[in-house]
Length: 111
Length: 117
Image (cartoon, rainbow over all chains, first blue to last red; front, side, top):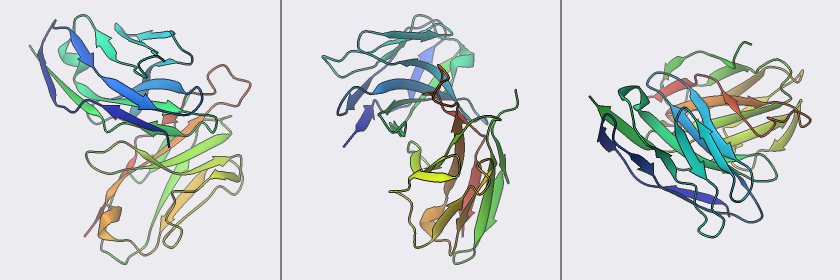
């Protein structure tokens, strides 16, 4: 069945450091891929998405590219801020629109 | 635009008691989802509604969990009787209709944190 694997956290970085959170997936067909973020005390919110191979999703300085050949959707940001501290979830959806999530990666950014 | 509303935000019950959660999706969103998020894990879909019909309830423990969306708008999720392992955050989400370019985006409510003692 469909599944998502993402790197375990926590990821601890200093402000302005480069961020990569790895995400790989297993799926039949051509899923859509998502990154959701959960800030402390808040609900899940969509960060970015990509719906087909080679698409790049971007938002708030974050980017992720849909790589079909490596079945990956790694999240990157060139310079993180303290306000980026949150839990990040990689997810996919197939033809039923059901989201299948990874286990989440906690990011902690220190000044 | 108002977001997805959920209540209560927190609930503490003893095992074998019953509990109900309520969700009001974003206006105009036909699809509604209930997810269970156990601490340290990603959310897992329990049930998906399209209007007031069930699309997917394959992972809903039907011996104790039930959900309804009678008028195709708000929804309730019930657990009866609760077990210790039901302690989790219950998330409600909704998504726009198929004709909307954002139909693949789910919008989440703040969740209900359930503790079963």
